[in-house]
Length: 331
Ligand SMILES: NC(=O)c1ccc[n+]([C@@H]2O[C@H](COP(=O)([O-])OP(=O)(O)OC[C@H]3O[C@@H](n4cnc5c(N)ncnc54)[C@H](O)[C@@H]3O)[C@@H](O)[C@H]2O)c1
Image (cartoon, rainbow, N blue to C red; front, side):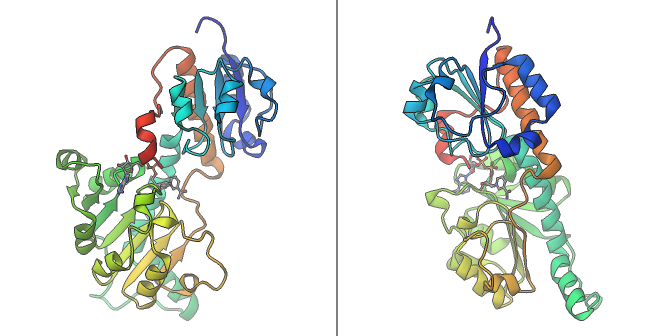
């Protein structure tokens, strides 16, 4: 672009200090001519969009409806300083030739870190043993019955960006990994260092099952009562993806029976209501959807988005480009 393009921020004002602190905002203001210094939280005033060429979006950006797009005839790029673009970007954005980028890669990194840590700790039954120690002053189980991580088969559901990151870390640590993903072929699985399995086979063969598929109609309750019953006794279910992937009632029954343990960063419903059976079980460990970028990690999203804007303005390829054909399968 020959001249400095006009830009606008569209996101919750609450998140701006964390996503785009002063130095990042200064970089952005050096790359775009911001038509307003503050972000908009709605598109009620279409006049503000008239000259906008680059929209930097973030959490709670309202949908880019055809009417909003009509009000922004010069819009060339939507750069999202958060993960999924599905809340505000639909096919009509791509149909107008507008480039779309997401910072999902930056949001994936902390989820990968968290998941690998949880798999490691859960494999040692650390959560259960910590709870028992707090409740009853218990120590280690007898020698010979103590849990360890070596030799376990870890089943990864979804070779998504997070799933691939988790596989890479597990393979590098020497774990045996199976992956189930209908969109992955055997050579691609082999390149990841994992064995490809269908989901039923993966359930039968894994000691730890970790979910990384997006919430889509076809992934709703993919871990249902029948598949939970395929898991070996003592298996661990880790869910850092979305609660809708698991039949919560069936999971609660399997955990209450002591057949499997679960570590859940996401649930259905979310949060679970007070008194829900899963909350009281000693073999279930629940966190409040914190695996993605939080606190000091949120800056990564802004850094990624600002670098994308700089690339776009320089005419360079976007690193987080999202294409229309990918949208239906993405988180
Ligand atoms: N806990 C958190 O804070 C947090 C943060 C970010 C993302 N997430 C969740 O993590 C999951 C992965 O996110 P992502 O950005 O890596 O996803 P992504 O957008 O990269 O996932 C797309 C991929 O998922 C795979 N997939 C699609 N349908 C599938 C199916 N039926 N079975 C298995 N695999 C299938 C395909 O390989 C597809 O390319 C999502 O559920 C997302 O919502 C959670």
